[in-house]
Length: 273
Image: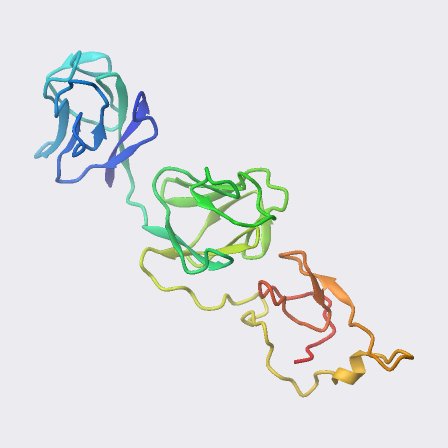
């Protein structure tokens, strides 16, 4: 079980600190977990310590005192669901099941190779720089998707994007992610991995084949000449195009997999590699 302090209102709204054996402090100096911009304020307003009976909140001289559930206290043993005020900020004490440490590993697009930690608070993915993860793609919406934990499950929710959010090639509105899932947003793809683990191998498709940009040669593959017809000018006719169901780009119908994102192409007429 992991214990947290979260800012509910005031200067630290939305901020969170994980409690451990090290004290979590409130005050005006930068070494505090929750720093106040109070001119002339004390270095320490309050601290939370781990003791035998659990986590205990101490008032160390906070302006106006420390209040737990609107009651002025000098010290208080915290229990799940407690709320308290320190110098104009309101905070909550939470106990949550231990969550897996997960990352989004970019496997396609300009961010390829970068890892993005998934924190306890929600994070957003989109085209504009105010997102936690910025996707540099014209096919991404300004605020494209949001990820957050529900208990120990990581959930992705599409935010009404124009081109959709995809998990393992399927368009979704809301989806509980698992390790190994492929998250597609705009022209970028992310693998859900445990923190520090290497990138996963190619994802196995429903038919058992791993996606490949260059399918293995086959004795039954049609000859290049059999798939084109000569014009009167002596040039060969262009092969027909089919749309990729994932990235929606027009792809040569002779390809069995999209060369942009390795999606298997339905209705292809065979490889010409």
